[in-house]
Length: 127
Image 1 (cartoon, one colour):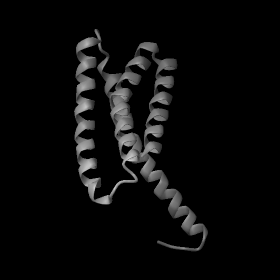
Image 2: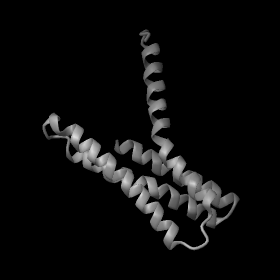
Image 3: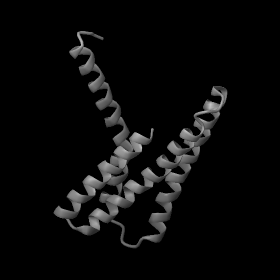
Image 4: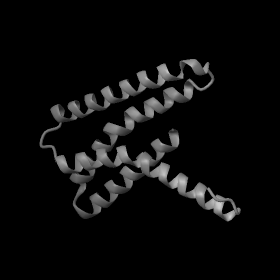
């Protein structure tokens, strides 16, 4: 889970760097803000799940669903706070940063699966 957060950070930072070099630092700033809207709650959720690792497995569903609910609420709250407090928002970079941060774990899952399949084929195993 923490690896997915690291991938989110790397994807948003790389995209902000490219945007900063091509379109200007203002776009890069809004890309970073949009990414932070998703990364901060996800990092807190991942930390909470990792702290719960040694507890009885019966409590995992409760912790997971309450954490997911809190993560969604914090994401909406951070986005609303940015909308209210930042003047002259550039919506496109903000939303692109948010979408990239939200979709980065899906790419991580696809990458891990393709690496696992490739290792199995290299060892003579087929799935």
